Amino acid sequence: MENHLELHKEVRERVETIRSRDRRYHADAYLFVIDVVEAVLLEIVRMRHISGSELCRGLRTLATARFGPMAKEVLNFWGVRSTEDFGNIVFNLVDAGLLLKTEHDRIEDFIDVYDFGEVFERNYFEA
Image (cartoon, rainbow, N blue to C red):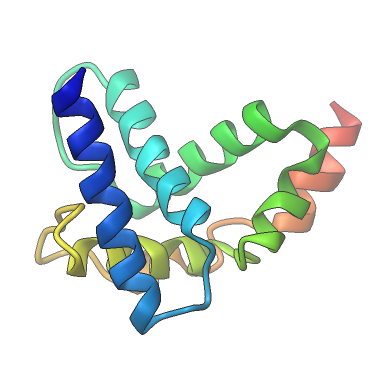
């Protein structure tokens, strides 16, 4: 348990370091993205790299499950208004050493993966 608390403290400290350089996103947005990476990794059969589009799908799934019809508002409060914002957060986490990337990963992998209004509003209320 103590190791888990130390790891959590280190992650929070690194997120605050990121935010000292880039204040666009709330600290909770970074922690949420880390939760999503863990959730997506648990769903795949064998450990492998996760693509930007897979991560965006995981973000949509977890945000909808966790926040329901308020998902878009929560994400917007955190400064996240598009899948490109997810990409910016991911690359900030990579720069901080909290996530890894391959030479094939690009910020462009996160641009326009889906429209927030479409997936968090229209699709939620039509389901």
